[in-house]
Length: 101
Image (cartoon, rainbow, N blue to C red):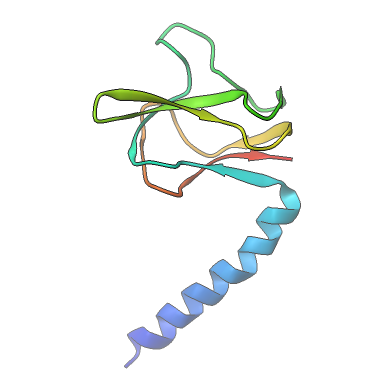
């Protein structure tokens, strides 16, 4: 019986934080599960860094799923204000990757 109220509180906390995230910018999320790469190859510069201006369609990162490299492109134009992932981390479907304001 105690676990149900805790779960309800967690949901409320997420609902409260969602509008704050929206006001601080939009989040680019992962459309698939896989391993994320922030650059095209190990010694290459990252696709984007904090402070970079991106346009709709610019590549933000790559996600490898089932040996296929998938480019993750920006849906919005703006400035990258936060990078929420690390290179070569496993990401989940819908996981926030970048914040763009």
